[in-house]
Image (cartoon, rainbow, N blue to C red; front, side, top):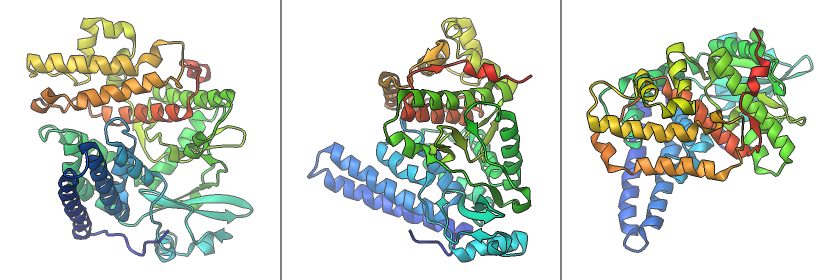
Length: 439
């Protein structure tokens, strides 16, 4: 893979890259209309999606930073985007052009006043993993294998301008109206600023390792503050197989149930006990050990769950509350899904939409145990997403719905459900996390 000697950091450079992608997309649509003359619409549209996904991704991967992070987030929305986009954007979790050795050394000299080979007994000149915000190098110090995560230059400084460029694309993809949308984009912007503050990430990583370290089969690295700063984090090198690679192979049901229970307990403990959650549950953040432990290697995105959101959100996870019209509607207003100024048509439409969504997504919470290998459950999720995406009525309504906290809480559950689907455990005890509650 080629290395990057320079990342576009100025607003002009980054805007130019997005505009070039836009021009290519325009050409792709011209090709699409030509292909329709000789191919059926399904095949022509598939080619269009493949070409657009490739051109947009190629631009974002050169920009890195928040632009690429948005692609990573979109890759998790398997039931919203065409599969061609999901497949291409999912590369942002693993396969991105790394920084050249010269840029890596420049970063170390800026923050530590010396080159990495002067700080460690060994430092790999090549990165072992390059993602949206930073890349990882392997190092060694006094016999310990270490992972050194280095943030790309200019990432933090370009967040606001990147989001302004990407905002129109996201609004078209998700049918977001301009009015009232600033709250949602501000939430994303604030989280991206947090993700680029490695001092904050280091603090949170150490806190989570301490607070969740007693949960069986969950393993965290040790962090080294003396080799970390606002743009570099050093931790133990974790041996294991990437989650996505592990799930490609066949494993015993007992192993899958143990790993699935571990993943579920880890997230339920965070959500219900800590009231803050690792809101980036994609496969690139987890390794599977030889002893089938779950190794957590990234805590960049943490979402705190405020009580005034937590209570109505999880009240609606109970079937008896869904079926109680008074309680159901009261909580929809509390979560800002319904508003006093809504028309009767809007109230009826969105009440039904969210009833259907909640009835489906909360099924695991209304059972003692759940089978996440049930393909029908996930097919129903996919079908419901496509069903509502095609409804014409929604185009005439204000579709900006729900508290800003939905963005990362829903992202957490979407990511968790996707990982459980890939893992396919057949028996998950839903309230098992309560066994590990520490007063």
